[in-house]
Length: 210
Length: 210
Length: 210
Image 1 (cartoon, rainbow over the protein chains, first blue to last red):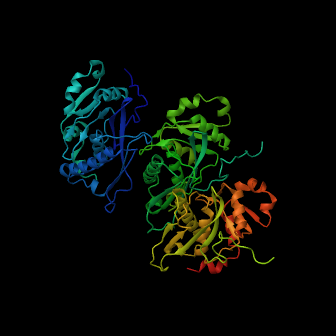
Image 2: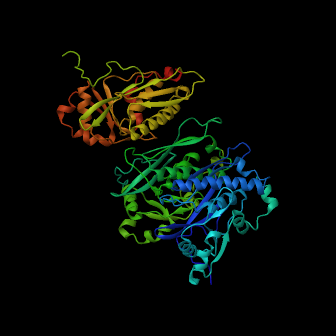
Image 3: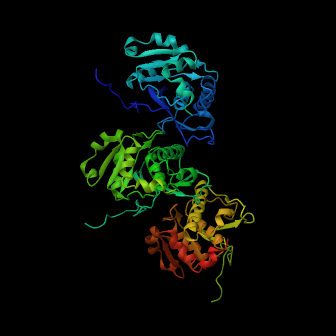
């Protein structure tokens, strides 16, 4: 009862557009992994599109940002063709904390969500976390450490966790005390993620934002 | 009882706009860490924006400058939209001394303050030092070595130290002899830092500086 | 008594504009360290400004050239705003001898002097040598090896040596036989160096040179 008890894993109690919470798997267990995207300069009809990334990212994770950026652009073009955000947005994607080395592909759907949240000017619900590798066509691939990630998610006050369809059996096998209070949603394609996160986007508004 | 006794840790007795004092944590203890920003060339309507950095910075600290630069631009755009400084400023950020290798994310708020001080043409009070990692959205993250940094700050004639909200318990635990003569201010967001440093900025002037 | 006996440490008996003598500290003792700056191409209203550097410089010393270049531009803009030299000068800075690896920040004021000498078309007196790290705001920082550098300066026929204010106690402690015949001038800011080197600059001429 009362407000949730947040630990230091949670940076944001309310997440502005552009922020999404992922989950990392380390030798120390699971941990929250925020992805932050913001506009690096004013969006104008003459500003030049691009993506800069920081956060002590390893090579695989750097490629993940590239895949997420390509996919997000393609997704927007297909779903909201009138939204021209990515044509002129000079973006900066960062994963705090800067001193912690990070690698691996499993933040793919989190990065994509962060970029789309900014493009749609729509915040991600602060109680949702997600983990999953993304392919260029939007397929969500299996990840490791779901158990540790679920524990970290709960510790961070998360109530909904999105994971790859390929991890469904891992989810089934989780003990009840971990799953208790946590809604698990599996995603086969990024569109499954989108439906959960951006269910309440006003399509008319989204099309004419930028 | 007379002016403070400055040791070699203090480079500036009066800090011109663009200079901010941070605090480093080394194997030898704490130390002052200045961040200097200046215009590399004349600011004109056709000069090209950019940021050059020097000071024997490691990869994490280089990323810190990038984050500080993006954040400072976004902050100015939101807070002083009429101030066009960053649209045309060719900047150079340096951390003396050049032979000392430096790394880590904890100069984030100091770098941002240095850049904003230049953009607002407003000097930072020479008796204030600060330490804190910054995220892209302006969240101030916990740092290490607050005790050693507080000792270094006092040695440098500092009377006000700004640190992350996440370090509040570290601050509480500091012995009275260290805290004596030192006002500690915790910051959860960069806006908390801004309020302390730039309280006396003339908003009208700031908007029409550049 | 006759003319001074020059050793191989001295490259120039008369130094053209753009040349300044610094002092290095090596495992073999002190040594003269020339900094040479010249225009890489004809200076015209359409030539593009820039700085190329050579001389087997290590990373710290490369950063030193960058700092010297930024500072020299800012200094000229402030002191001789009518002089447009740096807006169009494509420069090349070299430190002979090319086979000798060089590093460290202590040639900062020498590099700045070399660049200003060229911009003002004013030669540096051949009997003056200098050593000191420079910050972006023009502060001159303490260096190592003043004793060895003073010995090298004398060996090279130098009669005036400029060193950082932070090394004043080192200077005081030098034995009389080293200081004999050598005038030591300490500098807290680059403006102190400027006053010594460029005392006889014709300000009117300097403003309208380029």
